[in-house]
Amino acid sequence: MKNIILLSAIPIFLSVNVHSQSTANDGDWKAQYVKMQNTPEAAWMIRYGDIDNLGFGWEKNFDPFSGKETPSHPYPWDRNPKDTIGFDMIMLPSSMGTKDEPCGGDGYSGQYDSIKFKYGKTNFPFHIPMGVPKETKITTATIMMFVDDFQHPVFCSQFEAYVNGRRAPFIEKALNALNQTGPIGKMITLNVPLDFLDSLKSPLLTIYIDDATTGAGDGYAIDFIKILVNPNIAKITRAALQGTVVDQETGKPVAGAVVTLSDGTMTTTNAQGVFQLQKVSPGLAVIEVKAKGYKEDSFTANVIVGEANETRIELQK
View 1: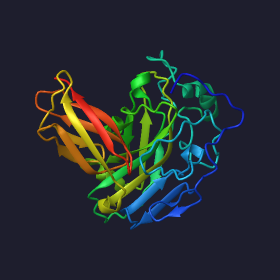
View 2: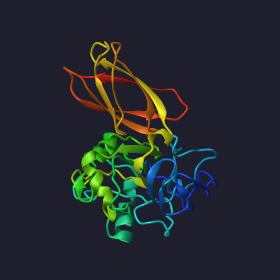
View 3: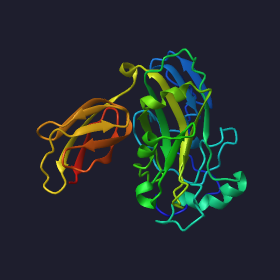
View 4: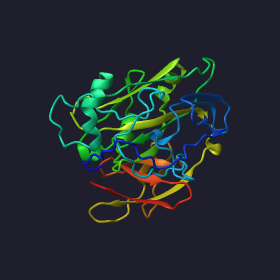
């Protein structure tokens, strides 16, 4: 996002198409909280926050679960006071204002004083009621978040994430890979590691995101968080991704590189340095690549349903 604040006394909406729909996978899109058992996608689906693109609505035929980015939207906007606190609002790192911004600030950061005055602080945790029966054996889980305007690469922020008070690197890696200039929104899908699965049996699952150290002026927003417990992978919308891993200096292919995505899918490159995945979660894919003789590194790729998703990854020795 460029360092320009769009001033508008009346919010400009992208579309009047604020879905008043109810779907088998997500229930009523206008509801702030939905818990459903045995959906087509999972044994349990818990969603917190309405599905409405921060209140701007969706363009005609836009599917937020397809992996597409939203068009840019104006800011600041008038938040619906009926929305659950933390959702559909600009939030800012708690370290902002405690030291000089390391790399400047985005347009959202211009709302620091008004947010601080109105709420007493600049960000909030999400306390998600779970209610999954204790006898449920949780073998896998996925967290889906529709996020807006995270820009670590530009503003030198360093977001930390916590799940029930415990550092959650699997969330941090995704958030710190985002560069959502615009501002724009996008889905990220995260595989919950095995050692975090028991957290999903808590009455409340608390997810907290903050940059408490850098002083960066990197504002952000979250439209909704969706949790799938024991997902039915065969029924979840997926997309294909093809990539090529090469040596950054020579351009030669890197064979045998291990490629792991944030949704848990994994593969290796062939002799030509090519990898192919047919069932990738739509949205921003955070790709970790390991190869003998090269530095382990993370990359990103946009994965959109129905499109040819290709990426080129360059490794450093």
